[in-house]
Picture (cartoon, rainbow, N blue to C red):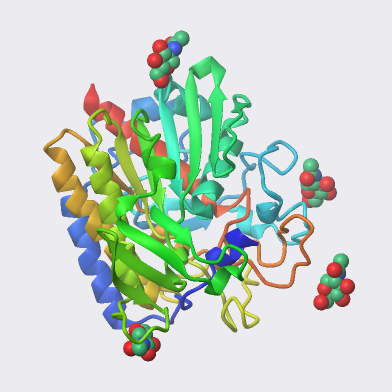
Length: 412
Ligand SMILES: *[C@@H]1O[C@H](CO)[C@@H](O)[C@H](O)[C@H]1NC(C)=O
Ligand SMILES: *[C@@H]1O[C@H](CO)[C@@H](O)[C@H](O)[C@H]1NC(C)=O
Ligand SMILES: *[C@@H]1O[C@H](CO)[C@@H](O)[C@H](O)[C@H]1NC(C)=O
Ligand SMILES: *[C@@H]1O[C@H](CO)[C@@H](O)[C@H](O)[C@H]1NC(C)=O
């Protein structure tokens, strides 16, 4: 329950095509292309889907391509995995198991404008990460992402669950590849103290210490090779902001004597502090990856007023755009990433963007809606926040693998 409501606050993001937003997005796109270039170099002639073996050959001289700009195209081929072959799927995202009747949402692939996004090759992924470690830090969408990755990797093998007493922390080990995968539950990224742990999740006040990274992850992250951050809707709840141990403002705290600040203030500071913490950790040598905002798709109501996501296929990018709160969150996190990139470069650290947002905006069909369950839960609220597994969220890992391959090519 916690994990669902966490992400359901804040205003819906989808609005019909809006010029201002479009212009903003285009401006943003240009900036990213210049500042955070993430190009996929592919051979001009490789226009069909590549089989895993072809990947190496096709990444040779060729044109540059931004894999994050593109569209969904029909793709009727087999799935990477099903609810039968992947044991890792949380019931909350196990749409098939809970009777989702339509399957068209599984039959699309992301097609970048100027190249192909190679299919996910589990062996290649594990070979690239041999002897390495990867951590997901953030909210339940990070875990959704990680479960998709584990499902994609079931083609090669199942990891050992490394027991850890704190439930906010999970760790797995792929023995054959000496690869460690971990997740740290830290939805605010910074130190957060719940003022009323027994109150209703969506409106209880959190004290956020904006200049202190959450020790849950910060105390253990130093040895990781890759760290993927995600954060979003937890920032819409009532919050008291602290810096240097002093109150600096609050959001929805309903106290007259405290400065009212926007939720974006806390969001920006949380990313800034997290990125700076990593730059400041002496022994940290890893790559920091921002997985950009995951859009929610409640229609005909908000999450708590009957909103649902009943669509069964992608929409066009004229129909749905990033807007309002979500656009602001997106821009905020990306600005902080860019600032951190400059800062980290002096120390030889890489900050990269896994820019999944554009692809997901047009996938209102990819959420569980009512076909997902929390254990023993009576499902009345639709989940238009998380993503069905399997589903379009698997594309996040196709992006991730492509990004890692490109970094690898650059380093040899
Ligand atoms: C998988 O989903 C099907 C329905 O599509 C269901 O009948 C089956 O019990 C599910 N299996 C598991 C292991 O969840
Ligand atoms: C496994 O990887 C770790 C680094 O993550 C390394 O220290 C260790 O030596 C590796 N073990 C083997 C057997 O390769
Ligand atoms: C604080 O800001 C929120 C949103 O910006 C606004 O709705 C609210 O009325 C403000 N409260 C006070 C006390 O200024
Ligand atoms: C679930 O909720 C419905 C409607 O609120 C109710 O009729 C039903 O008895 C509930 N089922 C359980 C198992 O609590």
